[in-house]
Structures are given as structure tokens and as C-alpha cells.
Image (cartoon, rainbow, N blue to C red; front, side, top):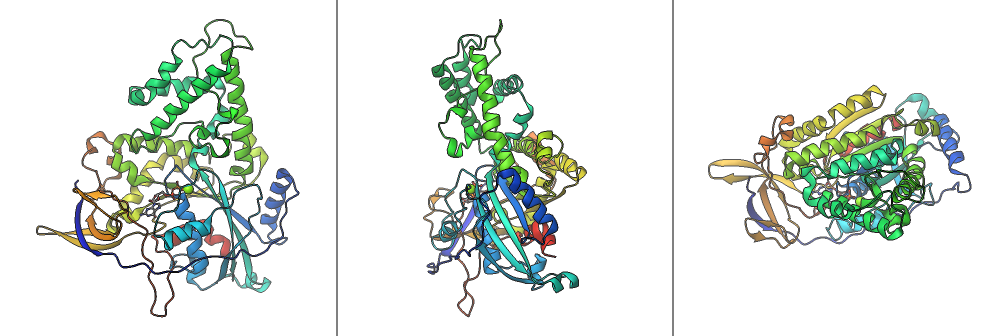
Length: 509
Ligand SMILES: Nc1nc2c(ncn2[C@@H]2O[C@H](COP(=O)(O)OP(=O)(O)O)[C@@H](O)[C@H]2O)c(=O)[nH]1
Ligand SMILES: [Mg+2]
């Protein structure tokens, strides 16, 4: 479907204003070992009395799914008292205040909340994307709804938000796989005709490689580079949200260029195996990657989460067609497998807490009219269907929602001949184009984005290929509204309150 755009009027000048929080002071436990701290935290959150209880909420999703924007908007709405009618503690007037405090983990970078909010509100640009883990603590003071709890005194909940790349999650299944199995699977995938364009240079680099020959660093590096090139190319194939492990090859974080990332899948040697062979070297490095990269991530971060939200850019996949949607579905089921306790026994042995609420959110719902939000939610529910059955089975509650962490558009109608079409109104980012017009980032337009299919399963079918294409434009973050009294309202959103209610509402009851 072609984008149908109508220019309405120029954007108004933006108001000045800053939003900064002064973090409070808090005693920190820094000398305990990880295991002791894990045990202590578990104890504390169980008894609830020793220190204020804390809740660790993981925020994940593949690159550009909307993690940074989501966390910034969530915190901004909590701290500034946004419009959150579905979030009960807030709607019932029981939330006294929410403020930032120093995070409990000194070794994890702090989420750059102030910078991101400044970008969104003052500059009306999207925050810069980040490629590593980050953490932020928001402390919520509230009044319990229960008579008995209220008598004990006002409640405090430390909400520890952990933002980490979804690509890293895809590493979890590696823990249960040896090098041979992983190499076989990876090579099989790469040799599928679907990836021909992306895989050719890497497969060419593999030509003539003898896994039984003596190992040498130059060969290892050359293969690792070619393999990384393939992984990146797969990710760029379309806007396909497809990602294969190892996750750090795509999102190295602080490990960029490190030897732990210098391996690649190769075909096994035909003859006898020697300890000095290339095969053995690759095998050792793969195991090293698991023990030095994957395990610590899961022990220090993943295994300590109480709740999790997985952000999914469903609209981008829909836009790219059924192949991309199917790829998204399989990536999501890999992600889901990580939340199935018992699959990796060392993980369940290490800690006895586990994710008990899991939310999947289709982000950027402000790109479609609200009459399509239910359809967007139904499509995501379909994509995670088989996976959510399993999570429900294992005791976790699962919810699915279509959201916009920051609502960049308003709604209206455009006339198309005799038809009145539901439209979204916003300011396209500078450089966005519709029907040959290139926008300057100052002009507001109304756009009919097209309709989502009513039958959610149809998005997986080939014949839906051209039918579903949406008119996609990236819009600037919104101009914040100011009340008659001069107060600037917090960032507008779609259903962030529902997300909050599901993920933390019960802990503020
Ligand atoms: N309109 C709109 N765009 C969004 C929203 N969230 C994210 N985006 C867009 O998606 C891009 C990537 O988001 P970001 O949070 O940086 O993704 P991350 O890589 O998962 O942290 C942003 O630069 C925005 O252009 C949203 O709620 N509404
Ligand atoms: Mg980010």
C-alpha cells in the first residue's frame, strides 16, 4: 500500500525545559561475593522486612526494538506522575513518590536516563542506541491497599531495571550444546539458499580449510571475521529481525576485538583428531566463550531477574514480509526457551528465584491507528503462542500487549476521494520521504498507514506478501503538552500503565 500523506501545518516551536533527577543516597553492599549477594537478595525479598524489598525487571529485545526508549519513558512517567489510569497504585492515589537511587551493582554501567530524557524532550530526537547492559534503580514509595500492610507503615519498593541486548539471550541454548553440534547447526543454516547472499564470502573462506591441520591464529582470526561478517549480513538481509548466536559477535559490548570472540564453526576433520589441530582450537575457544561470556551473563544478570519484558518490533517485521515474520517467530521461540526453568539444570541450581511474570510487547504501536492496536496484539500473541503455552505451563504468567513507550503521533482522519481514512499525525524525522517529498523534520503531516490484517495467522503466509505492506515513516518524538498552569506533562505513551500494572502492580498492592 502506498503511503498517503497530507501535509497539515508546520510544527510549533518547541518549549525549553529540563528534566533532571537528583539521585538520593543509599547504603550499598559492595563487598559481598555474587553468590552471597544472590542468597541475601533472595532472602531479603522473601522476608521483605530486613531491607526494602527489590524487584529486578529485565528489559530486553533485539537491536532497535525500543529498549532505550521504553526504559526512559517508563521511568519518566513514574517519576513525574504521568497519565497511568490502568496502573492501580497510581490510579488509587497510593503512590507517594518515585525517585532514582544509586543502583545495587557497581560493576554495571548506569542507564543514562537523564541524557536520554533530555534528547527526547528538549531536542525531540530519539536517544542514541546502546549496545550493552545497563541498570537503573527507581525507588517507589507507596501506601498499601491492604489494611494490615498499611498499619506496618508506608511501603518502599526498589525497582531495579536491567536493560540488556536480546542478542545475548540467544546464547543461552549454547550452554547445552557442544562445539560439534553448534558448528553443524550453524553451517547447515548458512548453507540454506535463503542466506546465499549473506553466506557466500564466509563459505568461500571455509573452502580448503582442513580442521585436522595444525591450528594457527591467523586462520582462526580470518574465519572468525568472515563468520561475523555473515552474522551481520544475515541481520541486515532485510529489516528481518533474525539473529543467530553467538550473541556477542553481533553485540560485543565491552568484548569487541577480544580473543574470546575468535572462533567460528568449521566442518569436522575427516581423519584422526589431534590436540593441536584447528578443530581442537575452535572447540576450546567455543567452550571458553561459554564459560567466560555466556555463563557470567546468565549468573550475574539473567538468573537474578524476577520479571521480564521482551520488546518486539512486530511492525518492522510485518513491513518486511512473511519471511521476516517467520524468522521473528523462530527467534522469539528461542528467546522463550530461556525462560523455561529446568531446561538448563545448572541455572536452576544456582538460584531459586525465577521469572514469574513475562510480558511480550509489540512496540511503536503509535505507527498505526488505535483501531489496529488489537490486531497488532493478536499478531504478537500468535507469534509467541506455542512458546507462551510452555511458560504458562511452568508457572510463569504471560501477557501480550501492543504499546508505544513514547507516542510520537496523534490521530485524525484524511480524506481520500470520497473515503475518510483513519490517519496518524506526526512530524516525520528529517530525511523521511513520502511520494517523492523529503521532509525536513519541522513539518507535521497526516498519514494513512494502511490496515493490519484481521486474521493474525495470515502474516505468516506467503500470499500475504504484498497485501500487508504498511506505510512506514519514522516520526520525531512529540512536543510535550503544557497545562494552563504551566506544568509540562510527562511523555505521552500507549498502554505503559498496563505494562506497569502487569509487571509490578501486585508488588505495590
Ligand atoms: N514512534 C515510536 N518510535 C519508537 C518508539 N520506541 C522506539 N522507537 C524508534 O525505534 C528506535 C530504536 O529504539 P531504541 O529504544 O533505541 O531501541 P533499542 O536498540 O532496543 O534500545 C528509536 O530510535 C525510535 O526511532 C515508540 O514508542 N514510538
Ligand atoms: Mg538501547
